[in-house]
Image 1 (cartoon, rainbow, N blue to C red):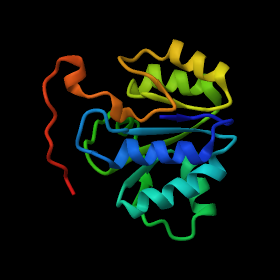
Image 2 (image 1 turned 60 degrees about the horizontal axis):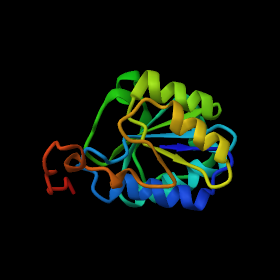
Image 3 (image 1 turned 180 degrees about the vertical axis):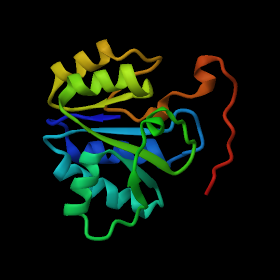
Image 4 (image 1 turned 120 degrees about the horizontal axis):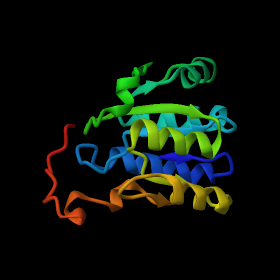
Length: 167
C-alpha cells in the first residue's frame, strides 16, 4: 500500500488497518506499507498506534524508525529495523514492513523493482498520482482507495484460501 502526500489520511489509515488485520493469514493481506516522506511524521505515529492495538509487529526502514523514535512515546507494536529480505517476504501473519519513500515515483520504483507486492494507491485528491501509480506498477492487482482484501486467490483461479487465522 502507498500513502501519497495528498491522501486523505483518515481514509488511508482505515484502509491500511483493514488490509493488514482483517485476515492477515491470506495472500492478499498487506505486507508492505509505503508512506510519502512529506506526510510520514503525521501518518506513521497514528497508524503505528492503531496497528499496535492489533498486535502487529513492524519491520521499518531507517527513516520510519527515526520518525517513530521521535514521535511515538511507547508504541504498542514491536518495532525493529527491516532487512531488505523483509520487503520480499509474505508473512501471512501480524507482521508489516514500513518504508518511507520520496513521492509516487519512488513508491512505483520500490513496488516494481523491490517488493512487487504493492496493491493499493490510496489518494482522494491526487488523481494524477493515482493514475500514474495504477498505470506503472507491474502487479496482478493494483487498487485506488480500496483494501487489498478485494482480491483473493479464488479470484485468480488459485483455489480457496485457508480460513485459519494465526491469532
